[in-house]
Amino acid sequence: MSVKVKKIGVMCSGGDSPGMNACIRAVVRTSLYYGYEVFGIMRGYAGLIEDDIVKMESRSVANIIQRGGTILKTARCKDFLTKKGRKIAYDNLSKRGINGLVVIGGDGSFRGADAFSSEHDIACIGLPGTIDKDIAGTDFTIGFDTAVNTAVSAIDKIRDTADSHDRLFIIEVMGRDSGYIALHSGIATGAENILIPEKKTSIDEIIDSLQEKERRKKLVNLIVVAEGDEYGGAIGLEKHINERMPQMEVRVCILGHIQRGGTPTCLDRLIASRMGYQAVECLKDGLHNVFVGIQNNSICLTPLKDAGKKKQHISDEWMKIVKILAT
Ligand code: F6P
Image (cartoon, rainbow, N blue to C red; front, side, top):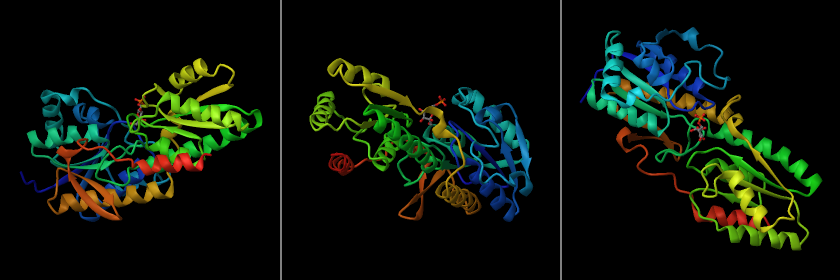
């Protein structure tokens, strides 16, 4: 199906991520540059179904590039999983003549966009907006860099107090099924162990390494664990360690949603601006039903239907680096 795009809608979907505003700004201003009318869809697919759609002008996106969150708000919407919901959404767009849609979100949002465009004459472009960095086909997702930097500055602070008290801290970071936030923030803060869903770590291995450090009187240890890890995050891991090493003074810190907020880093603003611009270029050139990624500093497009089929790969060498550097 080929769609000649007349008017463009932009929305965020799923969990918010820092840099979404910079991306909205880029979509709006690039659309206007090429003479398209552009509309903001509030609260993701929910706003599409509930007809919560506003016209955007250049000034609508002034003074937002530096702000976390999303001015369009976001949501996870069950009704859009149904054909009926998608038909209502289509009617709301078509009565305004909108037939190009830019969806900033994760792979679940891309699957929604794919279903939408296969049933209706809507050209969709996905832009990877998630702190989780769990989308294969791009080296970057909007918000990951900010989330990792937030985690790093929090873990640095925890190390100060861990060091003063000679304590073991288990710090849980977000990422759903992805270990990227844990891996990057753990390496950058010199964590002694990093536990991620992509790599199995036996509890014996963790206990051995803690006991070996105890023998060497190295009592300050930071373990960074991804929320999706097999031991059930920080609380689950603490239980295992307490059972095997009851003498050890353990503290747990779950960083939680602070990782989703805050001022986007320069990198997130840059990739958000580049991807937002590229989405409109794609719609203008008749390329659609793809998501935009950046690989090796080049733009690369992946069909929306393939979103989520592959996972980001984490090489074994990273785990070797963690082990060597944490001695
Ligand atoms: O996908 C982003 C993310 O922050 C995940 O890292 C986390 O598992 C999830 O969203 C939390 O979702 P919610 O904000 O709905 O609790």
